[in-house]
Image 1 (cartoon, chains in turn blue, cyan):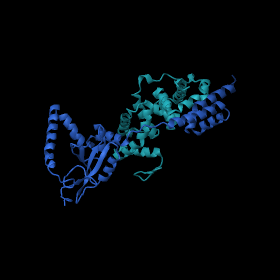
Image 2 (cartoon, helix red, strand yellow):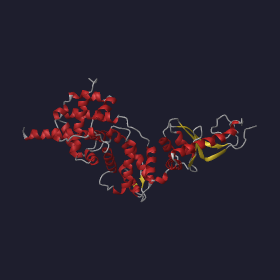
Image 3 (tube, chains in turn green, brown):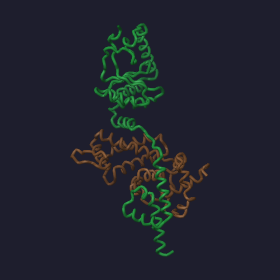
Image 4 (cartoon, chains in turn red, cyan):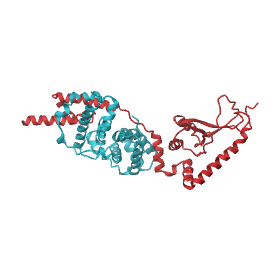
Length: 225
Length: 197
């Protein structure tokens, strides 16, 4: 092989190896010119260039996996700033760490019993949705002069949602306080003042949330006439 | 492109300048800057980690490990490379810990290079097979993590091989040979895939 042939072969090898970066446009001017001048005289490399374009299209058309950035950031922020944890998670963690299993079961039993006891008067009051401070309110109900709690909302998750996801979703709205779920799975969440609308929008955007609505107080007897 | 105003009044116009500005604010422990950078990189890192490892279940954990390092070590960014190179380098190192032993690369060198074998692979019919997305995914899954990383950083992120070398902590020629071998493996796998002929 002559020197000239050797040089040509070396140029061919170099150009061939650089083609992926020629295609993605990242080569500097000198390299690009070298590859371009070789492409002008090399059928093999021109064919390979077309292949490289196809590979680029194939790779770029592959679906990217999406993980929710907001959930991930909430987790990381909790790791960086432990004080950023919500009241809900602190109470939960304290409960798990401080109460032995029998005590936890006992406490749950007491809570259920207390809920049943407090619900008994409602069973004897047929006043309907406008007079009973229920958890849900239908659009057709006469809402009368309901008070609007500017920073509380009621939240119901879809069935089967993992606890970790529930916590992440709750963290998204920076809750000030979260009540334990009712027997119907309704949480009452207090958010910072002025953030109710954005919290509702965030929650309603999540497929894991079945219901998110502002809390209305129905202590008056509006609509009972 | 959205321009970012610095405290001193300068305007960060390029993505690199914006990233560098965010890193300097993170160095001052500004959580809002960290959240911005996190959201800028979450999608990119997610794709890179999933593509390199061939697993989706670890993405969330690795991304947060990466960004935790960014939060802790922002001051160590020395501006010798692009911010994205620095962050992807951290991601690659985190992902490496999860490489399966079966995926460890063998030693490669340019002496393996055989132009004839490379350019006459059955007249590139394998590319037509590769265009089937399910086959493409299964073939990429059979490559080593290093090969997948080179493919992803080149074809999807459009990075120069020098930058890829910085991310992967290897010489530039190693990046070129990994690409060469990745291409050859893909061709071989596509041709040998049952039911594709």
